[in-house]
Length: 516
Ligand code: HXC
Image (cartoon, rainbow, N blue to C red):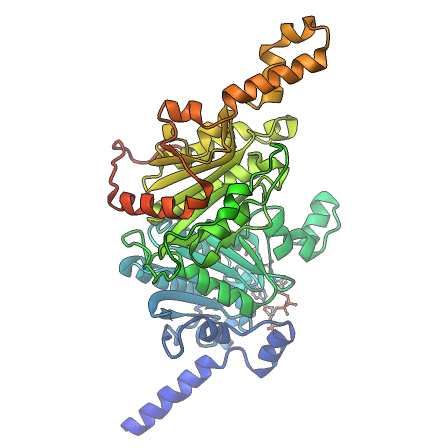
């Protein structure tokens, strides 16, 4: 065969490989409001940057007549490219070929990009749209999945791994995304569950729809499996690129800094007045975050889940930081099972990937009651404590109002190794709030008083004077400084600059045993 014919043969094969599962199946995919696997890659990566691997791979199954249909790519498109000039690896499941179901050959393609990502130190993006294990391949498909899970775990904390769920993701297939650092879902077109509605009906007699069982709304508000719920794929891709700007290539690198045109000494007088006079009145912690961060830009994560704690990324003087903040607007900012787990996992992401942590604290304590206790608030609260205590990145806390009880200890206190602890003059740092404290320590005095209400009020005032302030903690060095709220941005930027060269070492160990 002459070179011209060889080139033609190559071009034809590539065309066949890029044709997905044919016009009809592509049309079906579009009719569902979904892009094809290749369109998705084109939209996510910088134009012209995608280099594909393994277009010629086909499955090796010979059962059920499968040998008569071996489409190129085998239903997953894999390779590498760039996002804003930064290298990423990507796999994109192609629902138009065998419903995007996973064969052994298909799994090997994914494993290859995972290994390349780990070797070269670059993030991995997985676009999931699949009917799960390819039924015709039997245990080979299960082996393939497990090969992927194993690498998800091995590379956790080594390279950022991000999953977009853009269609079905069912059965054991859900475990790969759930191990990755961030999961993004699209409303109404994506779903994740271990067993579908039919099996649920058989086993538990429950009637549920796909969306009720594992839609984007459910996973971003109730289960916390998904970090984001987007209206459509285009919005998901935009947010993926934004998220990407806050994270590094790998645990060996820092996040690239961006130019900061927002004055580092910008003051906000409104912050001096944001805390209500009445300590039981809520305010919106997000207003503080937005005020302090560069360009008033806060990228929130898991915004619909455990709203009593806020997590997300922002920048200070162009450097990426992870923020954890109690939200007094929801459940008074109390720590409970879900908020503790939400924050703990985020702290660990930031620590694994060299992103400094800033905590804004206004927490009345841990949520009491049987619901919390039965669901393990002891071990779940301990997760947050553990995550902070083992984090070696620069860590700063700003107490805006309440820092009571165990929650004071847990929320990145000095005693857990925080580097800088600041408080606003409105801070109240004590074992508990005046209401509870007075009832307990002045029980007898109140009982014996003629006017019990007046006595209680008087004692509460006394307690407030004594304890509802930041100065007791500051006197002991637990708080490094009490600052003017308007200056918070500048104080944080200075502290983060000072901490740039922070280096601490932890005791030698294989790994700790976080209370899971
Ligand atoms: C092989 C599959 C497949 C699968 C879909 N297809 N799932 N082929 N293995 N798992 C094929 C269909 O035969 C069909 O082929 C094409 O993909 C499109 O599927 P449709 O059913 O026509 O599409 P739709 O109506 O949109 O329904 C999508 C679906 C459904 C809900 C995902 O296909 C489905 O329920 N699939 C099975 C899901 C499942 O139970 N998977 C196993 C989960 S257990 P044609 O040729 O007709 O176009 C699992 C274990 C993993 O994954 C364990 C890991 C440890």
